[in-house]
Amino acid sequence: MTTTTVAITGATGYLGTALTQRLRADGHRVVALTRRPPTNGTLGWREYSLGADIDEALFDGIDVLIHAAWTLGGKDVEQLWDTNTIGSRRLISAAAEAGVQTVFISSMSAYFGTRQAYGLMKLAAERTAVDLGAVVVRPGLVYGASPGGMGGTLKKIAQLPLWPRFSSARLYLAHEDDLTAGISAVLNRYDAYAGQVLGFANPTPHDLTAVLTALAPNRRRRPTILIPKAAVMAPLRVAEAANVPLPFRSDSLLGLVEGPTFLPNEKLLADGGINFRDLM
View 1 (cartoon, helix red, strand yellow):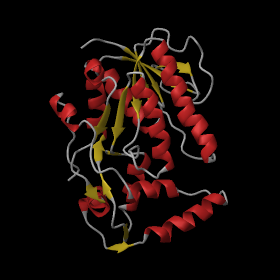
View 2 (cartoon, one colour; view 1 turned 180 degrees about the vertical axis):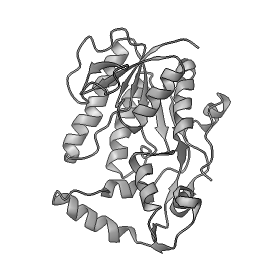
View 3 (tube, helix red, strand yellow; view 1 turned 180 degrees about the horizontal axis):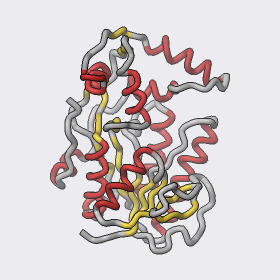
View 4 (cartoon, one colour; view 1 turned 30 degrees about the vertical axis):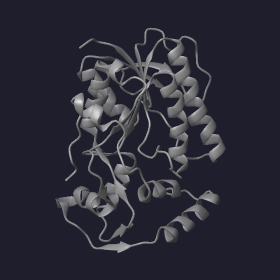
């Protein structure tokens, strides 16, 4: 394995932290591209904010960029598009111009036919990444001992005495250890995956009740109640329009009840020895 210097946006977030730990354990040097210096004083750092202008020296001495940063809330859709999608395109283009290999962390919500705003933004940024020969990784629902994001939200729901159930929800999942190991493996064989979209998840999808059961204390299933999507979506959107702080967004719910039906390049990953355990 060749030691490389890897710059990671979102390095202090849930996935970025797990990636940093994995890549450093594999012998790579990691530089955090974040707004503020990481609290970990042993980690290299350069100032960067998604959507901002890019300093021409940002990629000096960098071999690989892993772009994992993304802004989720606090802005309207137009602002989110400018920050996330346009900002990601600008960053990926600058990395390509500097000769830096790039891995763009997208989402399983980014599939053709998605109605989720988050998925549409990721899908648009994917196009630039693929056109410039970067590797696009679409992680499934990421889980582990202390998951963040949607995995963390579902783990909290799994502790409730009554669970919601949506008839159409089928979820692909990726354990955080398999995800980070897979990205590390991609760096070792970058040319084999360049310009490809990779579905990073176990190929067997599960319904929401099965996922909650696996995440619940003692893996004990709770009673469920079938909830029509509209009964939840409408109140969430009203609250969002009124700028009411919410622990769960309507767009996130859409991602739970609608999703992809296949994993892109599943065979390519399997042939390269990149596999994902089943949650069950």
